[in-house]
Image 1 (cartoon, rainbow, N blue to C red):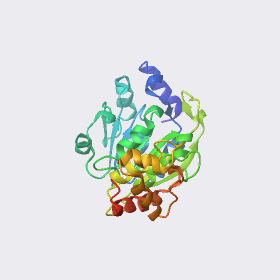
Image 2 (image 1 turned 135 degrees about the vertical axis):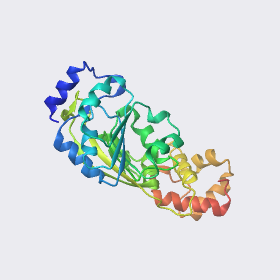
Image 3 (image 1 turned 90 degrees about the horizontal axis):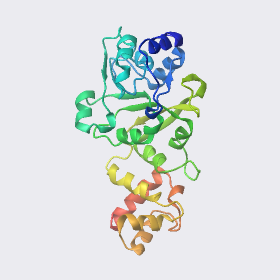
Image 4 (image 1 turned 45 degrees about the horizontal axis):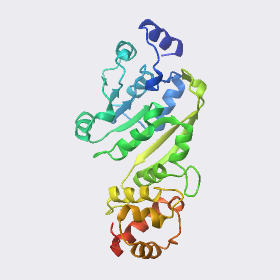
Length: 281
């Protein structure tokens, strides 16, 4: 559907954009097809879309996917989606909040093999990414349209101002890349910031490592940016600083190093050193 047609359908049902729900729709057909290509969607895939909006992205996903489960919390979109998605038999629209669903509920709906593709509301970006990264059965990949500055944080290298706990958590659990950038003018209504499409392929990168503990360790490294890694880990583990200092040195790092200078691989090395030293972790 073209932009004008979507606008006519929204007007037909008296739909009003809700700023509180972060509703900024994309309608450009070429861009929407490109996002689906970025996601690598095939006829074998079950795709979860978070924030169906007017169904513009939903329709492009459905044209190539085996099944699409589209979530939205705004019931006012129900007649809009019935019309815009009327030709697709492989779409299931659910007016539920994914953030309030348990892993078991989510997996019962999606199965054990799925992808996430979405133009997500900005205000739930980080919680939603973490929700799926830490899911009992995570998706194979997430392809998300997010604020450009958030996308930059997700791929930021160690030692940069953008590098943080979210950056290292993503790096520990998979591989992230920006696939394209989207100027704000392509959204309706027009937001105050530009966006980017980020694809995160989730993978078991460190077999034999307790990924939950590893990620908790990495997040602790960013507990207080002005504190050294040693002090931040002391707060996490409760271990003696002498034990921690020995483990950090054994891992090849200066005990005065700050957590934001360590890469994902560095945190794996540190994790193993802490375990070997029995440093309260």
